Image: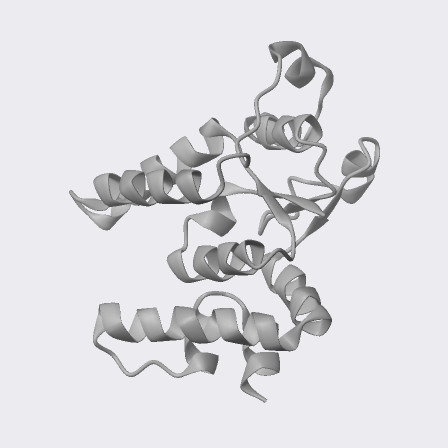
Length: 180
């Protein structure tokens, strides 16, 4: 399965690390565009003066880890597409150009299911997407979550608990499943 990852699901660190950790285990093929990655870098500016530089370093790492994830398309593709927010058409174009099956996004209102269905796509939130992956292979997803938890503890110096970390990352259903 190919999943286009919207900026809003790859910018938050913990969410991104779980999503890409599951992808690295072969559960799905991630897709994005250069514009999506650029939006991530620009969004990171709000973290402070080093935010964008750190994001660009992380972008280089994920691009190297998933070299076939970036998709491109002809401008004429965007011209034939429509979404309620014209600023999101590039996301739909990337999904269509990459032959994605789904768009993983937190932005449900700007990606109406009926509009996506016209191009053979569906939309899912990251929590639901990762919960499905957990149902398919709980051991693998649990292992990825444990690695993310270990990293969060090491980097922050805080004694994070799995459920709290995943809930803070807007993954409450996955948090409950993994913590049982």
